[in-house]
Image 1 (cartoon, rainbow, N blue to C red):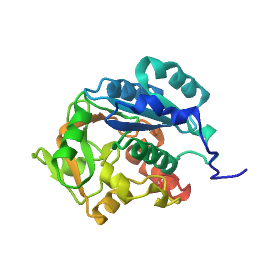
Image 2: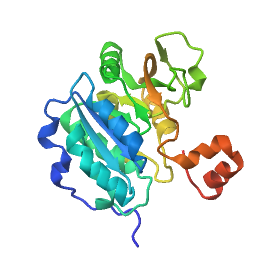
Image 3: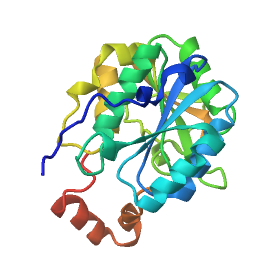
Image 4: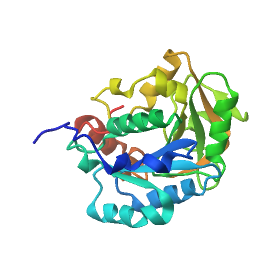
Length: 257
């Protein structure tokens, strides 16, 4: 079996075309099962107070999840890309998703927002992120702080839980739970250079943004509800059974960052 082969071109008009014309931002959500949280994510994005184009990248989910994603795409209003039609590389395919999304965003000259499938945005979250980047010099990445169902700051932004300011300019890594990539940063760094050996790129891209002279921010006044690891349940072992978690992480080579 060939690993890492990308079958191009991928038509369906790249699922983009006319639906992009009015969008102010391209929003992407990588998905591996977890259909309930994914649909919550999609419904919240669809209720945003600015026009967006939302693409869900189905990363080798089960047939049941695939069918549910197909059933709801027109009802909710998102585009759907099945990565199994593009590559035979096993999940996770975050690098490919980022590369495809960057290409689409640059073609339409709009910024890129990652909203993961265990995150629920508010109607004004995306407009807040966009407004912040427009009003600040050389933004690279701008993230929303994550909170639990009670509104308390939670993973992965516990490091900022005592911050009282509305925003933070930070040298620390941003999570891609809900993070906006500025158009200028997308033009400055080609995601083709991302390391194939990694699964996730939050830390690397956060640092790359700073290295290129951009500024990274976390908005404490634009919180999003985060259900940590709901899209990757095995990672809950980090809290309930850390020995098993680290066995899977290091011995099995999962979750490479």
